[in-house]
Every structure is written in structure tokens, then in C-alpha cells.
Length: 345
Length: 286
Image 1 (tube, helix red, strand yellow):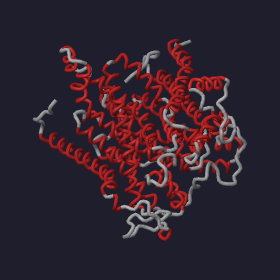
Image 2 (cartoon, each protein chain N blue to C red):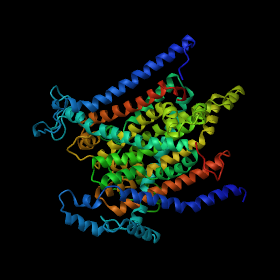
Image 3 (cartoon, rainbow over the protein chains, first blue to last red):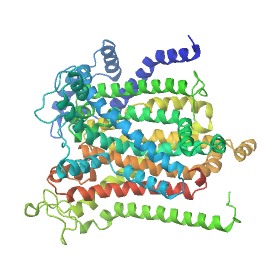
Image 4 (cartoon, chains in turn green, red):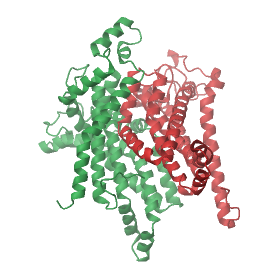
């Protein structure tokens, strides 16, 4: 009980978590139900007669009133049931648990790469503001930002897989015919390490390189923009001038400026992490990764309603949890943030 | 609010040069985008995006087909230009609609700070939704209807307009001249329109260009995934998705040209945003 206000803050936020998730749930349910989209019609296809559409609507329970559907959905959620996929009949919660590790294996290294490259570009841009290195870094950021991730993925595959042949193409997480290591964490490289299967580990890492590079470079542009702005502000502060007057080396000054900017930088990275859980969907699809994102896209194309709802709920919930963790962490890192009150820019 | 006329000459000339460069950037980018939007409408008769020919499948660029042909033998130049008819109007419509919906709420929440504070929490909750997934879901559930793409993008973009407009209005509405107008008994809508709006226009337009860039990327991603606009209509994302199998065997032209189109558009939107910010009154901010 060394810091009671902080502890109380954390407890209050954790207690509020179910309500926030309920809000996310209600909004996502409303948005997918109120808007003029008729999933029954989409499932039936453009040639279907009205009776077929009505039949599908009845089978899915879409003919019942909105309130009844919502309470029914809430009731089964409280019982821990996320529903079952129309396509496979499997319970959705099991499928999430099965696919999430693959996505995390992809996005955590990608985000680390994005942070390193992005902060590097941002430091160059802010430190050399108005000079040639800054415009070079700005140019790189503009290009990275303008290349859509799927195009970058294709270019990388063509250059490194089909062109130079040094890395595997978009064939998933392992070479075809390689046995998956015994499942412990669900993340293939980690499992291979745990099982001591070095060739499998090396193969998994080789398959990781291109998708991680794609996501990392795409997201580094976002981090570069924000870190250039934050560092620019930090370097303009009085304390930086004082530090220079005290004879700090420029390297140490930059590190100090990074320390000043660390809280918003971390927050922004967390926002990106939350976004990447679903945002990696396109890249997963391109590389046939088989994780959460690819499953999302596939279910969308099959109009698999329970899966779609569960995915929206899960990704929303994950976002809320990441934000909460971030709030607590920034409270710990920055004593100026008044804990227990909303902070607004 | 007129700028100071007597500046030290050196600084003034470099400032003038920077402004001239920004103006060229701005109007150059606007011209590129306008050309891409208008060309298929004005000169559509020169294009043959839908005529296929099995005898000229995947031909490399030549004098007859400047961009080559795709895997069903359609002229890639025609298809690349024709796609501007779909992708860009959708982007512009979505951005404009989001602006029209988001900006008044932003102004309202910024001006009456108490209410705004609470409403921003609601918007926080909304933006915590996995928006890309939600957009995908909406568009897929509607079967790729164009209006649904616009609605989905508006859902994603309008809250960021509310946020930006609110923070700008919040900053401006503490200014002395607003206080003076209020003391004078001017009504709130009139203050917002006559005194606050003119001072936040530039930053909102810059934000609109940035949002247009991300809306454009989202629309391209949707059509790349095949849940956006349906295939016979050319879209840049759809053309890229269609070219993947050829690309793997080293045939680069069906991918390069739509890819270049996407790239050029995003760069133009970003340049517009930068140019507006650096020529504007608030140019010193960034």
C-alpha cells in the first residue's frame, strides 16, 4: 500500500472495465444491426427469391425484434458463449484462442521494428529540423506513408522471394511439409524453441521476416510523424537549452528529449498495437498467415455473423484493455498526470 | 490578422520562397487529383476499360497499349484511368460527408466545454472500436454496395473531425475577440460562424486532406480484399489483387500502374495537407 491513490485509480478503472466493454458491445451491435444492411440478402445472393431470403432471416433469428435479439445475445455472452460459426460449427471462443497467438507472433516484432525505425526517423527529423537530413527523413516518411501495405508486401515478395529467392514466399508460417511443433503457447517459433527443434525455429523465423518487414515499415511512418512532433517540442524546451549550457553531449540531450516524450510516445504505440490486432488482416491475408486477421477477412467474405460479432467484440475488448494498461503505465511514468481524473489535451 | 509587412529582407525572401513552393505543391496536387477524377468523365470515350481480347493477354507496354494488357487482355491504361471514376469520388464523398457531419458537432463540443468534455468520452469509446474490422464487416454484410462504403468510411472519419475541430475551437474560443463578441451580446451560432470558423478553416482543411488520404487507403484496401466495389468495375485495389498471380511469375506491369496510381494519390493528399498548413496563418505550428 505504498501508493494508495494509484491503487485506487487502477481498481476503479478495472471495475469500470465491464461497463466499457458493455458500451463497446452495444455500439458494435447497434452499428451492425441498425444500418441498412441485410445479411440475409447477402448470404442468399443476388438471384435469391424473397422466400429464400425470409427463410434465411428466420433461421438466423434476424426476424425477431432488435431488443429481443440484443438481450438474447447478452444472455448467451454472460454464459460465456460467444456463439458458433455458421461455416464450421465450431465455438467461436475456441477459434479465437487458436488463432490469436499466430497474430501476436506477427504484430509484436512488427511493432518493435516500427518503433525502432519510426523513432529513428523522428529523431533525425526533429534534431536536424530545417536541414538536409530532416528533409531526407521527411521524404522517406512520405513515401512509406503513401505505399499501401498490401503493395509493399507484394513488392517485398517479388524482390526477396521470387526474384532473389533468399526468403520464402507467401506460404504461411512454415514451409509446406514442415511439421508444426507441439503446441504450448500457440506461437510457432516459440513452441519450436521450447521443443528444441532448431530447424523448425529457423524456418519459422525466415517466414516471419517479410510480413514483419511490411507491417513494421508501414507503421514506422506513423510513429515517425508523431515522434518528430513530440521531439521537436521537447527539444525546444528551456530545460534542453539548460542541459546544453551545462555541457551535456548532444547524444545525451537527444536521449533526455526522448525521455520527456516517452509517455505520449508509449501511448501512441499502444494505440497502434490495439489497432494491429485487426489491422494486420490484409497482410495476414497476403501471406496466408492463418491468424486472427485472416480469419476475420475470411468470415467477412462468408458473412459468418456470429464470428463477425465475436471478432468485433474481442478486438474492441482487447483495445479497451490495452488502453487501460497504458493509462496505468503513463500514470506510473509521469507524476504530472493527475491520477483519477480524465486527462485531456 | 494581416501579416506584418516590414520583415528583415533575408528572412522575408526565404519565407516568400517557402510560401511560393507550398502554393505550387497545393495547386499541383489539386490539379493531379482533379485530372484523375475528371478524365474518365470528360474523355471516357477514349478509354476501353471493359473490352477484353483473349489474343492479347498480358502483353507488355507497347505503343498501342502504353501500360500493357492484363490477364483477360483489357487495356491497362484504360482501366487505370477509369478506376479514378470509382475510387476518388468515393473518397471525396466520404471525406466531405464526414466533414459536414463532424465539424458542427466539433464546434458545438468545443464551444460549450462542459458538454464537450462528456461527449468526448463517448467518442473515445467509439474510437476504441476496431474500426477497420467494423468497416470490413459493414461493407461485407451489405455485399459491397458503394453507399455502404461511404457510410463505413464516414463512421471512421467523422469522429476524428469532431476531435480536431473541437480542439481548435476550444483554443480559439478563449481568445479576446470571442469574449468581446459574447460581451456584446452576439448569439452563439453567429459567434461560431463569423468569429471562430474563419480562424479554424485552414487547420480543418489540412485535416480533411489527411483524412482523405487514409480514407483513400481504406477504400483501396477494401477493394484489394475483394469486399469493396464488385470486380468488373475497375478499382486500383482490385486491379492490384487481380495482378498477384501474374506478378509472382515476374510480369510487373499489371501491378505497377494501379500501384503507382494509389501512391500518387496518397502523396498528393498529403502534400495538400502540408501545403495548407505551411501557407496558413498557423504555419508556425508545424
